[in-house]
Image (cartoon, rainbow, N blue to C red; front, side, top):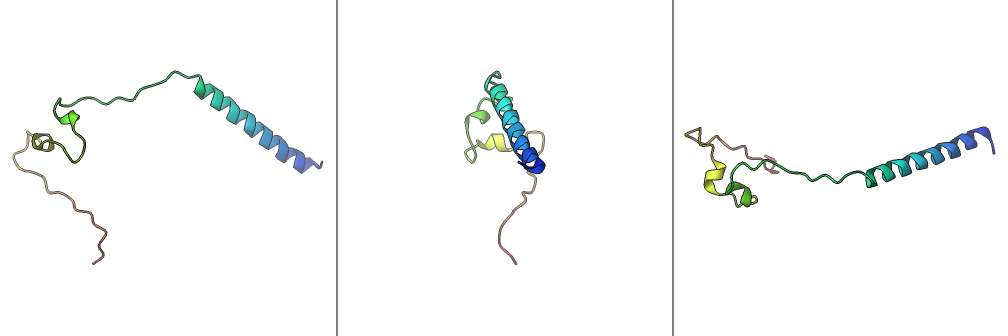
Amino acid sequence: MSFSLYRIVLAIVVAAIVACFFTIITATADQVEASAPIIGAHCSQHAWPYYETHCLRDQRQSEARPARVVTTEKR
């Protein structure tokens, strides 16, 4: 085997060992659960687009903000 072929094979073996190491480390790590803060009891029970009307409005503002419309139409 030439020197450059030896280096290529060695690099592949090292990469495989590193990949195995990270696979074993992540498999033995503690499981973590994702969570989000609950803002309102009624609002958090529904998924989009079935939000209740009072969940869509900011009670601190008297009028609604204009919505941005995004379409795929080219004019």
